Length: 303
Image 1 (cartoon, rainbow, N blue to C red):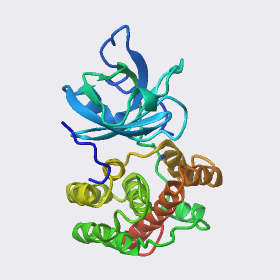
Image 2 (cartoon, rainbow, N blue to C red):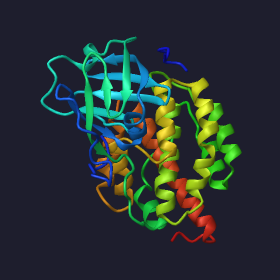
Image 3 (cartoon, rainbow, N blue to C red):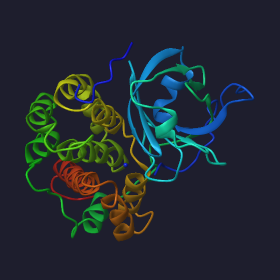
């Protein structure tokens, strides 16, 4: 059984990916839902027990041995670990139907609790950003802030720029968990940095970005499990894989030439109470790190 412990964000465009557009035929009594492809392995795998960590009105957080999922019954920032109930809306809020401490069973396409939920459609939390020139990315983010009060990400950014996985992990270890709430500001900041590097790095021709982040995934997960909340640790894991909340995905597409940079940046900063500004600043710092890595590879020329 998963012990409920809290100390241990809109999605990308809807897709019908080959083999993942639907799950098995759901029970007739089940409530339909759409979910992020980032948690497909948890939802479609073998059945396992989970526990409701907490909830707030239209949201509930469910932890399994493979991470935390966020279940919602109303529009809002959709997360890379999110499940959203398909209309018509429930008569009772998710937070009431899934009280803290209650047990659920997840797997084979469903989440079974006081209400059976069947995932019948999927969304992709990994945005497609094309092949932007690093110089154009640098120009589009020139006026955007990349820092937050009380947390410095310079050491993490410098380690990423240098391609030193051990230094990235050590720098993250020094700041993760700083801040308040279910996702402390430092965690959102680091997540934004990592996601930008993982998504935009390869798009600008930095073929070493993905292997670098892949090499820190396991040690970063171990650090997060002891330094921060289980929800925040799960979101950091998604960030390392290039899976982000939809407003973040829209912003990354915009800085790569596929949208309005100012409007999408504002949408990211509007997420939550303090998460949005920290996430946005981290993403900008990550993008500047991408530009520097490309500049170093090309001898100072942003291509």
